[in-house]
Image (cartoon, rainbow, N blue to C red; front, top):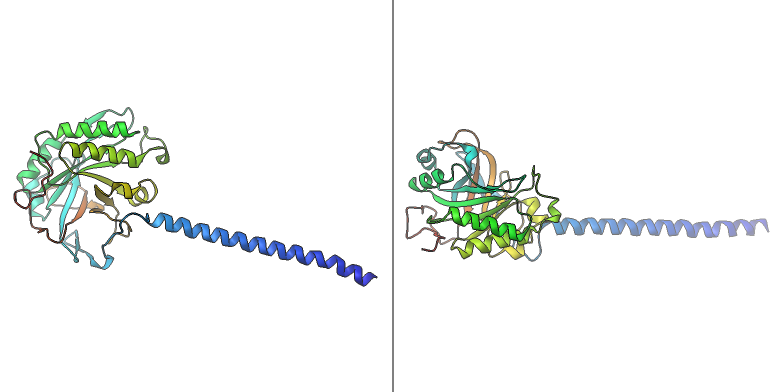
Length: 289
């Protein structure tokens, strides 16, 4: 009798232990699956075209990043923070294009302002033979505000010719105006900005880093626009398509005092990389006369 009672006591205990083990194993599998799913989701947007660039094809020479698998242009982006620039020295150093900050929205009250050196930089960069594009530093809270920013840029560009796009650049870091990024319709803002500048005859583009590209932008909805990625290092690892790469904020270029952002612009295979703003037949002119 006592032996039978002891067996009855151990029997349900074994089932309890087995149930606990099974529940724990199931929880572990769910956690692993969830983590793998999140990693895959963050790595790339399945519906967006993937990057065709091989890491092994990138190399540094004379302070600039180069790409061995196809044609490209060597460039930089600047604002009033670089001060006065000797554009002839910049061109002689091998820089072929520049993306100028045309203006910005204030990060506190939200006013719209022109970059102090924009007019001077535009005129002298073109005179030096560089291809030119521009960007606007956005703090838009809505698509309507992004359109307002685009209209402001188009006013600054009146009568000007660009070989490269007009880029939308929203950055929330150190902003007193912007809420959490998840609360901003970033894709809608970028698309609204690009549509407005293209209505004025320019090509629209979007600037972003990996974090923004994976988390906050629906890149599939922006495939009609030029994509400018900021990823610093020897070779980009971003898995989705991009057309222009900002690869350092600490570049050194003759004619500029201090650090400057450096960029690499990939060209279609049939495009000659030696073309400049002065090569009218080969230039990529976005302005409609």
